[in-house]
Image 1 (cartoon, rainbow, N blue to C red):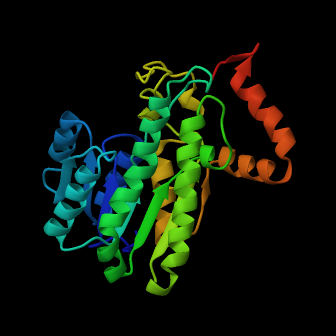
Image 2: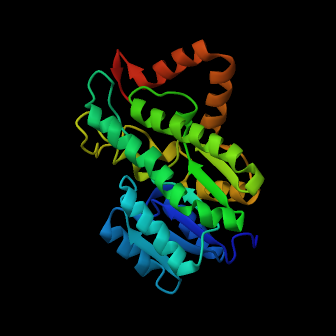
Amino acid sequence: MSQFFSGKVVAVTGGTDGIGKAMIDELVTQGARIATCGRSHDKIYNLQMQYASVLLHAVVCDVSIEQDCKKFIDSTIDTFGGIDILINNAGISMRALVKDVELDVIRRIMDVNFYGAVYCTKYALPSIIERKGTIVGISSVAGIRGLPGRSGYSASKFALQGWLESLRTELMDDEVNVMWVCPGFTTSNIRFTALNEKGDSQIENPMDENKMMSAAECARIILKAVEKHKRNPLITYQAIQTSFLNKFFPSLTDKLVHRFYFKNGKLVK
């Protein structure tokens, strides 16, 4: 097993579900010192109980709130002395057409997916620069190609990637690695909690989770990419295929994406 993460301080936002939780499970086995946050008191408590024998710094935090992010980062530095790796994983999705969605839904998506990463990164930056560490953004296939019914989600991921690319260039002389990863469809709670046009959780999931990459496998690939200092790894076949088609055959991709998401003029996925 690689010793890359052993003893390193890794902060993961949104670590109580899905890919974030899977990354924590993997990081524990690799000897990392872990900090994480989530909005649910119960899920944070359950995580602490699961890893009661491990020094796991877990706090309740809504990343859309700047002061919550500051408290999470500051308390992590107070606990461990600094941060080597920040993984901006917390995210929320949506499923609604632009003509139907309330504008506050898109604003909420941006606040969590984009500004949450901005806040945490900004407050962690001095420590990461000092340690010549790594900043990671968990993007999506929706950050490669705008997806119908996920306009706010795609917008947040495009914004995240552009911001991180700017930051990567700014920090080259500081020897800080800035990267973003783009998974395709993976098993995750994000589709069950996706917001509808009114801003309520969907509850139902229109996708077949059994045909997707597991969160555990996705987490292992992401952490290996962090270890190898990759720039922008595409994870899952869907992400690789979408990137290729959208780059070289954009008009064809329009039709293929429309066919996948719509049936008889109605959004079905």
